[in-house]
Length: 132
Image (cartoon, rainbow, N blue to C red; front, side):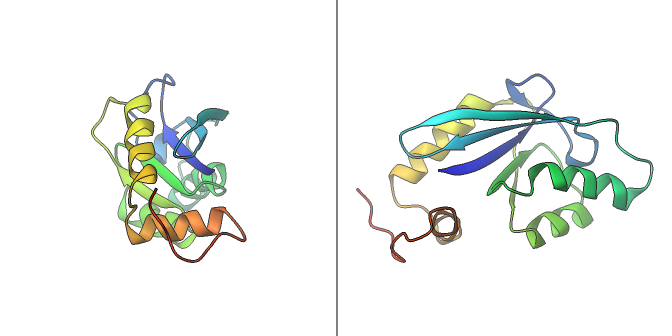
């Protein structure tokens, strides 16, 4: 199972910028299952850029993928260094649609970056991917 975060204001769509997001919904997702793991609610973003980015990053550090509608270059670099894969999506994209899309990719032949995340999320898994 992958932990996947969504920057959301209402729990139904991705509609938040990473740096100002006050809620990340984290789901556990596999090719067959998806369930809400938890909603992580944060306080207002700090005025200091580094503190603001770090507080948001701490909320999603254990996730493999992060969906946002926008993310700045500095924040994106920090997220990637934390081994979280940021994905920008169109504002107001439904979380359920993104989960279904990810499940379809997981059930098929995932791209190399996603196969790597799957291996890291599943210790002891085979080092090669074999589609069903």
